[in-house]
Amino acid sequence: MKKVTLGAVLLAGSLVLVPLAEGASAAPAAVPAGARAAAEPNLKVGSKGAAVKRLQLRLKELSYDPGKADGNYGSTTRAAVWAFQKVNRLETKTSGLVGKKTWAALKDPQTPKPVTPKRLRESNRVELLIGRQLVVVYKKNKIALISHTSTGSGRYEDGAVSRTPRGNFRVYRKIKGVRVARLGTLYNPIYFYRGYALHGSANVPLYPDSHGCARLPFGTDMKMFGLVPIGWQVYVK
Image (cartoon, rainbow, N blue to C red; front, side):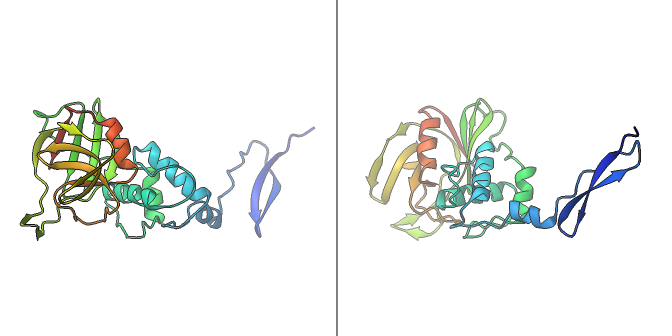
């Protein structure tokens, strides 16, 4: 009996099997554009469902912190999206919009380049990138966490200019929980120079807005607190 090979053809939205010539190979069925759009929809704060969960899981794989992968797009996921978009030189929006360019970058992502000079670089460190409003944690020279941040606003307020100090520092103190300071409330602060710290905040906007500390999204502050012990290098550029 002559062997008949079947191939798949998409006709009017239905999958139809047709015979192929002997020895011919069946080409893979094309994925309809509508199916791709359904798998990679535009997402923003308030979105829910399987696509949000895929986004959250992918961000976690890439060392961002979107919070629990529960399919609900909230402020923590938005902060992780902002960080990812900044690393990949994509436009960021207040809504945390995830569109075609972000989905494409998630498949082929960039990673931050170290900014600490080699002669100073330690394998365990935190890098604070003022220009890009990012924090990158390295553990044994591998990226362990990437976060959005909001640093010194540059405004003159409370008798001084709100500026985040630049330079090479070291974590010298940590306080678990809440600390009420003169200039505001700090959550899980990690101090690296005088009164300057990386700490959680309810307000971590897209622009520099702090009195000089590096604000972190809620949840990410706790993760960083657990990752970064006293004595680690903090390099601010």
